[in-house]
Length: 137
Image (cartoon, one colour):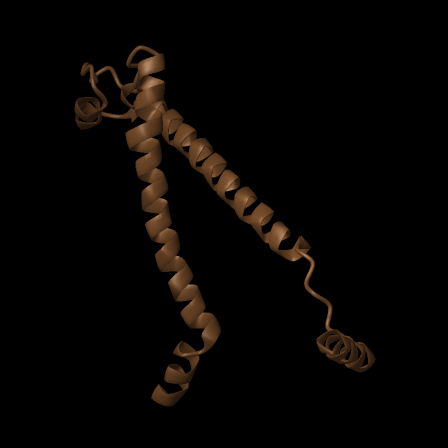
């Protein structure tokens, strides 16, 4: 059973998948940093420091806090601002991934479109050799 598991784990597809997951997680961290550290501060500066993540609607009369963290401690709240922020983050991340994949596809198409030199037939090779010999004489 251990031998079968080792064979399964060492198959190319499993290893490729593992590498893809690790690279995907690292890329996800980069994109999350881009959104959280670059794009969202710019949006905040444009909107005058507006931060949706702290907006909520209390679902209980016991909730009197002004910020989401304290309000959650006091009772049930509808944290719609946090949902809106995460949705906006998702849209930005999806757009960035779309742009990256689009660029990669364009580069791939350019590589495929580049004409490869066709392989010469035996007759063409002989004619080329004869031509080169005639040039030398």
